[in-house]
Image (cartoon, rainbow, N blue to C red; front, side):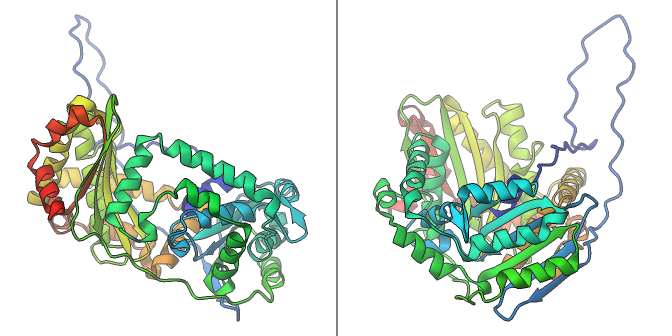
Length: 484
């Protein structure tokens, strides 16, 4: 789970916002014939003039141990979010898949002089709940509380980071929870598709391992958990974020006291993956399945690359929005799928683009053909100015939401810090978005979305869909290339 996902749990979730512009609105259905004239339909107002984001003043300092602390005053509600992001996650577990996740869960089972119940009770008394989240590159410990309890929240987060009890008595219970999750995943086509996709994209690398074997899970001991925490948690890998309304002097004292004496620990482990040389086709049989689950993916430049903004907007136009080309094609026009979508997924110094869809079994081949065709059309022809402007308006609106709360702002700052992005990443984001041209979007697709370099995973009834796939030259060419 990424820091943004965890932070949405430990704070009150914002109400879902629906962004609408004239350009993005669906075309109205034809009016039925009637002898009585209807009043004209009032159109929504045009979107306002986009403005760059103004980042509130923030202060960052580094303790002698290497621990970084960022204070940022934000909002008017008397609440404060304390979030510690540690540069350790699934990357550090190597082939011991989910050991980092098991360690994260164990960290909530008591810390310092508190057991798990006391941690939960103290967090609730402060108006929040403490969460621990583990992702590919980072582990986050976070809590959102009433401002008056900020110092106590800092102490609680520090205890969970520095002095988790990791009690052996709770290991078997938590292991059983993970075993149930694993067993359930083996029955879900989405999980099977993601597992196969990542293994194809990042072979023999932690980024490519989505699930452990049952034998792996059963074999993890309490010493494995304790060793993982000892070897991967320390001040040098940690960045503490404090956002909201708070007494700066009181919080600074609380941080100094809570983290005094914490060992520096190791530097972050850096291990960029080597991507697959020969992308292929992975077919997983689900006899009798009424739908086929598709994943079409390709490694792509990471957020530090100059093309990243163009690639990001290209993704939105192609499949990353409800009104995007692929969604409009295979959902609205053809009726092959209900909720297809594409996304960019960043890791440290790598990323991948993926188009996901669950399609009708008898439309598996035709749906893939339309997806390939839309990618090739964008590579070949720049989008129209109006289409691109609509997507830019949409992304500008989403960007507002991504900076609208304490937790969302921390997630943005953590993203910048993880990837080593410049300080003006947020403040000039809107400017850079609107500076992109149709030609740049087509060039990004042409450069980074080569259909012959994509990995395809299909989970479905192979007895029904294999003949459909064999008609697609993009699929047969991949199978031949992989066989070499």
